Each structure stands twice: as structure tokens, then as C-alpha cells.
Image 1 (tube, helix red, strand yellow):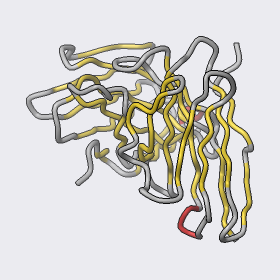
Image 2 (cartoon, chains in turn orange, cyan):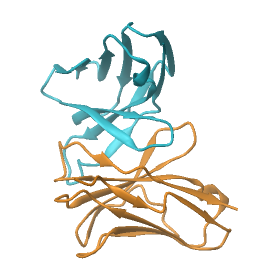
Image 3 (cartoon, helix red, strand yellow):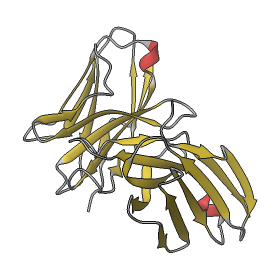
Image 4 (cartoon, chains in turn purple, yellow):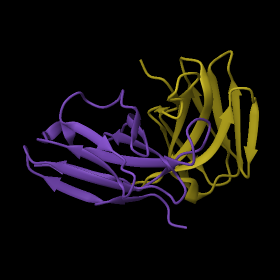
Length: 114
Length: 114
């Protein structure tokens, strides 16, 4: 019973490069959430996806950030032209369905921008 | 403004003592959840309490919810050194199509000394 798998665990990019973060939800889970955590802070919601659909992207910056959850394969959070302020831990969570269900989190991807 | 603010920010106790953490929020909620995060890891779901519930127990954990005061508390009884972690409350808003989205507080850092 694998949990939520995120890779890579650590990612280093130079300013202007692209970062791709992957998330495989728990088996049987079709709802995926992405959160960002800055040092010493709580998690901030970014986007909520179901298979092939974006349900809520109210927490996503308007530019450079995008997310997808295709029919086959993991969910991808993509950050184009990274800047130093993008340095953070990015967590993915999944649930069986939305609403009043616990969310199961991966161990995150620590993104560092040089 | 923060939805879900924990109090205290940090708590230091001896093994065997009880630890109480509080959480306040601002909007109407569908449910409130508590999570634990060990350093460098993802969040682990502890307990979910729905808006129509007042108290819930799980092992050494006891959660209360007062919707009139928009507050919740997490009590850990007979604490252990392994309970040392950051604890976050998270709320799922009532209504809308995206009530799976969680809003996290800043967290309480709990240190349990052996």
C-alpha cells in the first residue's frame, strides 16, 4: 500500500529554468491537491485537481505556474522561469473523493533556486 | 487574514504531561482537521471533526470543536518524546464545489522532553 509518492525529493534549479514536480496519488485516489510551504510557515493551497480536470486553482500564481493530472500518469506541477521566491517545499496530497475526507500527503519536493 | 491560527506557537513539556493546542478560524466550515508534521517530512492526518460534531477521540488524542466561537482544541494526553513535531489545524470551507481545499494555520511546534 504505497502512500503518496513525490519526486524528486530535492530539486535545484537556476533562475530562469523550469521545474517539474511529480506526484503519484495513493491507489484508488482520484483527487489531488498541491500545497506550498515556506520556511517556518503553514501550508498554502495552490490547486485541486481531479483526473483531467482542474477543480480549483485559486491559490496558483497567475503566471509561470501550471498543473495537470492526466488520465494516465502522475500529477505534474510545472513552474516556468523560476525565481528565487519560488524556493519552498511543495507538497502533494490525495484523497478518495473531495469534501470531508482526510488528505494523505507525500513527503514533498524541496525546490531550491540558485 | 489567517484562516486557522494555532496557539501557542511553541509548546515545551515533559514526557507524561498533557499538551493542549488551540486553533481559531474565521469562516464557516464543513470540517476541521489536525495534522502532524515531523521535520523534513510530509503531513500525517490525525483526526477530522465535522461541523456538526463537538468532540472526537482517537487513542491519546481528543479534539473539540466550538463552531459558535470558531475554535478547536487538540489535546494529547500522556505525551511521549515521539510526539515532538509541528501540529497544524486545517479547515475545509462550507459550500462551493471545492470544499476539499484545506486552509492551514501556522502550526504549533511541540517539544516533548524525555
